[in-house]
Image 1 (spheres, rainbow, N blue to C red):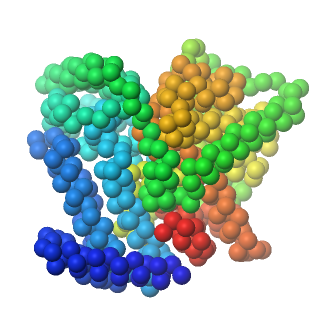
Image 2: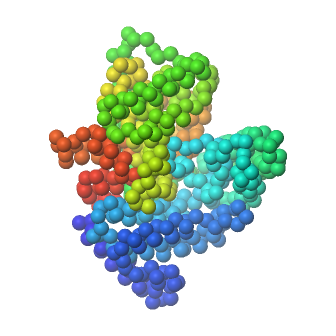
Image 3: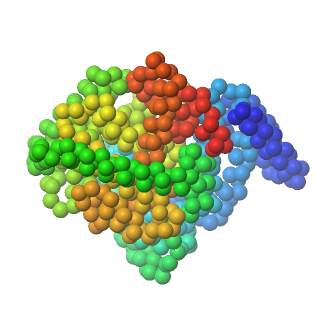
Length: 552
């Protein structure tokens, strides 16, 4: 069925392009009308597409001006037409999956130009520097090209690194000057949130000023000028935000388009609301059942010292990796334990707003080690390059989010079901507190994009439905998360919806294999598919086409 659909669409698009060609289309468009059944042509197109989607750069300044973006939008159709002219209906499923990955990426840029326009409506798009590493394949949300990942540099800096940083930091004032001309769209909540985000950029640059002052005074001075430019940019945002009234959500219709064509999730906005409401209720119900069961047990105390933090973290890593190996949940790579040990982090005294995830981990380090399979995913991408060049690189537009966040979230409950926390009844409660928080914040994101909630209402909802008041409405965690979910449709729901999709895939595979099913086999096959949408993994693992037909 699906191969017939692919061929039919290819014929329609090629015929349309021939008409355009006859009317004097560009050489690029004329080249695009050539039909192909070659997978090698898809790989070539993917390589050219990746180069095309990045903006041009002059003197370190990426070009997001209205003229440049209009030209990119116009030229995008030629790439989409070239893709549609490729008939992959006779390919192995794994290669057809790659076709859909490229299609989703192209749709992502199309959505950016039609709807999101982050360069024109979100001042925080111009995040110039990031001080910490993300635990997913690429930086979450909409990120300008060329932003500096400060965490990749080792200090004191080598001459080469210092020169590279100096070049990037020196371009920052010009980038922000261009941004002021690009940002023309009223989106009140996005502009409000941008002031907070850019304040973080200013602090990161301020830290860099001090860090390199002794060894790299020229870089320190340029970082200081960049910080001044950021502070002036924040004031500029504040001055224009005062008169803004327009909502920032994309609306249900566009949200559904994004789900179907970019995220490749076979659910509608309304489906997601129903699923998330169910998960809010289920997580609270199971938490209350466990609290009743454990009512005579002492509550988990907070970690209170650096030494205790280090001992408990390292013990939790060893216990988690040992459990995976002992229970044969999947093939545990040799880099598993080192990958988690490297993410120990730093202890902060538990006073004031320590953040939701510290509220959890300072009581038990065990649940979030399961979420740390994120780091296995990243190490696997580096160590075990996928046979497909299309899957060796992080997908654009956060298309991997339901796979990455959904598995990390789902694995917390999955390993508990497999016996991971059998000896820690109180710690089991934390798993449902984590799930409740993910579901509550997801609903905030959904309601913001339907333009039912303002950012404040989304924050209040997420805070209210996070148990034990561990994420108060003034906390940094809730504001940072809701900003990301407003910037990037479907990211806020990816934790819960991805988990639900993976549960469904596991059930489908178990039904197919019967007595031949094992969790170890399932998860090894799942990991081998790469960081792609779960619907595509399901198609590749099971051969079932129903979800892909719905998306296509």
